[in-house]
Length: 301
Image (tube, rainbow, N blue to C red; front, side):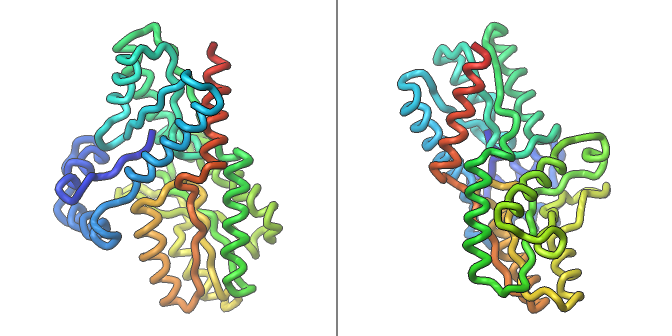
């Protein structure tokens, strides 16, 4: 399961309305989102990336357990919706469904919502179907190894006085204040990678947040762009490396929010800028997810 994205410019309004839980976006917000998609080529590669990821996981499952698994894609906010995927699986005779969200960190507003919708639809169609899940994988060794390698690679091309920012999508502050583990798990990922790279706590790295929603309520911070400005003011930092550890696919919040918006802000401030690659269809990371699917299915047997 993944967030989903408009298939083309003509689908942006319907997509945005679904994200806003049925409330059509004001014209200014809709136009801004359309312009952002236009800036990255008109359409996000998220759907293509998700299909590639599903293909690698499916191949890994077939290699490990021939004939036992069928992989379907379901999106939270765009067709095919995750409920559609449940219908296809049960229609094909599945008696056990393993839910995997292509996001490493658990949150009630993201992973839990995906899994809740999955379970609800399965129960409607056939209460006898067993639904299990891979709830989080933020400390998966293959994922940490991927991030570690990327941070090392990028730092090699940046000034010595470079700070690493581990970023993830911001959440409303009330969610975290209510005990949601998301921010803590992002921090755990960052600590694990920073230790592997031997970054100095505080001076060499920090956690920052990005892509906060456009709502009146406060969202957790500090925002990536605010951190850039603070670092530039100190005069002690020459470069910034953003490691978007909360994302596993190229999409709008990486290609626009970081590659365009954050890169432009860094340039204005006189800071060298780079960002690490995301896994996309990396075989080691997705092979590890295939192993987790098998483990989850086995535990429910």
